[in-house]
Amino acid sequence: MNVNDLAKFLGDACYGFLALNLFWGLFCAIVVWRRLAQLRFKNERHQAEFVDELNQHISQRAYEDVASACEADTRALPQLVYLALANRDLDGVEIRQLVAERLQRDVLAPLENRVNWIVTVIRNGPLLGLFGTVLGMMAAFGRIGTGVKVQPSQIADEISVALICTAMGLGTAIPLGYVASSLNIRIRGLQESLTPAIVRFLNVLKPSSG
Image: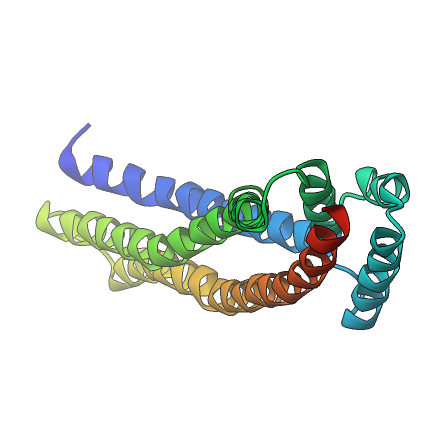
């Protein structure tokens, strides 16, 4: 296999790499989207009502009722509340630190890691496309360099196919860029909604647990 044949083979293989790159980005986006839906309340009103109900139980020292309401709930806020309730013997600073660490480690970090993968896909899409295009151009011009009579239409076909790689790379990066921005906004919104809700609960938990 000469250099021209190798360039053509690698250029064709770039289609597969571009497809895998796109599918990985879409997979990560779907995972984050579904996970956000699982972690959030339907809206701020439902979350506020949930916190009000918990605070009412805490004021009455009905800790078992709070635990039963939160233990099986997979949303982020109930799980953080359950964590705080299980460690209510700690002082206020320690509980807040524990909850903040768990929020970052178990809730936000996995989402941010997936979004970082999407950003990597966005960056690599055009690079893979350019790599495939360069290899395709090398194969096309290598055919001319052999000295064999080649029809211009054949060269044009090879060059146009090579440029498809660039189009595929850009076609991956552009829509996923909007998706990544949307997911980042949703993750930040989740964090901003959880923080005041947790603070409200902790402000009631500590005075009533002493």
